[in-house]
Amino acid sequence: MAMEEKKQPIVIKRIVKHGGHHGGAWKIAFADFAIAMMAFFLLLWILGFTDDLQKAAISEYFQNPSAAMGISPTPPHPTEGQGVSPSVIDFEGAIDMHRAEEIAQELDRERLENLKEVLEEAMEQSQALEPFKDQLLLDITPEGLRIQIVDRENRPMFALGSSQLMNYSTDILRELGAIINQVPNKISITGHTDARPFIRANYSNWELSADRANAARRAMLAGGMEEGKVGRVVGLGSTVLFDRENPENPINRRISIIVMNQATEASILKEASVEYRGDQPLPFTP
Image (cartoon, rainbow, N blue to C red):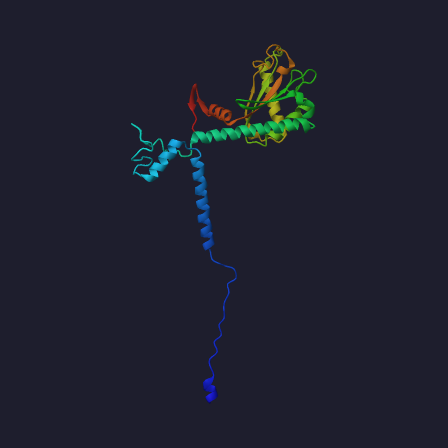
């Protein structure tokens, strides 16, 4: 009996370990960190577009905040008649739209210059383009990247007096269509003829140049170019000669393809957005 009274109760402790799950607190911390970093880099980006006066005005605003947005009680550089007007700190336009347009234009120009390099490289390596590289003229114009395919003596693009493409001309245009399709820019296709009069009833160099431009469009589409990339197809007859000194030079017979920059594309879209009702042109509101 005495031995039983001396026995002590045995307490067994079991430690329960949770396998690797720590709740969702880390997600909140990571989200806070990501937002803070985004705000920091956005601040750096905005400061990169501000001049010294604007930076001083921002500094003064946070040192002496006022109820009116962008208006400080004291000027950053005390001079007679000078204060900090809302126009100095334009929070609504903190991301300068003019600067944004300049950046977009620079990117657009770089894209076209890169496309020009790709085409020049293709002219050296492509089996379809290399034999005719002397008939492919590339240059950057105010409208965009211009690709001119010109006739040479004994090597025309089209059958004489016709809009029927020669086999090698079709290959050239299909190859160009596939390459141009790699950029988002729209294109303009223009047909040109020389100054020799076209002898055919109710058919002139105007119709011929327009038909040839459309034939070039169809060949480029067959090469894989999207139909929506075509912004304009026109025929100018012999009004814009390549060789003005010799109006009958074969080089005047050509197809001009312009990979349009944003400004040219916007201008064309503006022209196309005019809806005519009778004789009165009315602005079209999409």
